[in-house]
Image (cartoon, rainbow, N blue to C red; front, side, top):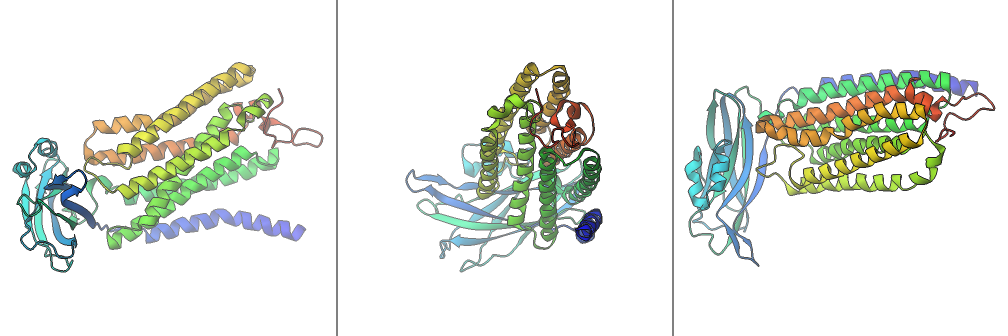
Length: 446
């Protein structure tokens, strides 16, 4: 038994070193170059057989070019039908972000090309083969711009038929990078977050071990926070893998990207659940035991909703107005869920404070303030980024969300692993000595 405990202590002491070694390995193999290949399906002609909806002009893709002289290449292939009309003329039109809204506002789609800065007549190969590349350059001196690419076929060839083509865009910045201007920060930012999350896990583990030696067995709230931090760490590791492969194939690993976003969402759901549980009186009042039975099932449903939204959003593909991962239906639904959770948190915290003693009331003042900063981070960022240029919305959104997540982790770790107001007001202050209450009890005596 003594030998087993000694081996366990040695294994635990080696954990920080192992985590540090993993991060060093990730830093060494992290991408120092960039690559991007955008491939988009575009359907021209009859869009719906039942309604006879028809379109001769469709948005294809977009790319943010930085200042300087940038280059891009585009090519086309027909993927349906197998025998495409030989006389079909397809034009690629490139619009700067300043003219794009004006072009979309023109009712006649074939008149929109008047707003285009560049146009190319595209040729696709036979038997679903790629056509030749059309090359272009973009020179910008004042500021970066997002360029929109659309395909049009304004002849009579598609009046009674449909054609689906695949467009491939390969773009290179003046610096040689292939990352769109709104994503150029991604590799370095991801490495910074990985290092920050690793340091947090190391400090959290050491503080938790020190705290358990003085107080006794760690409370479930500590383990819940640890799980949220580990899930967040897993998301960042998967995102680093995605960026690493992005360097070589220009698309990354789609499954890894989706799983990383799902884990990031789950980390937020776990943290939100923990805040709501404490607001409802978890660890603070024994009288709350009957009112918490429905919380976990509701939070599981919230987690499933977040996962389905991520999968649904990825399946829809890109659209012209999307500049972050939180646009459109997905963003609005997440916004509604977050506001609902915040309202629940505030009502629960207010009720718990009214029913508790002076110590709980004093604790709840600061707890509600810090919880509000976390829950309101998403709604504030959701509307705030819309006031900025398109190419800076994504970095602002991602940095804000990650900052709120890591900041909340630090705050909760300090709350749970120090003998402050929460320790004194909750069951964590119960004595671990024989004959006294267990420190792992879920509720404090009234």
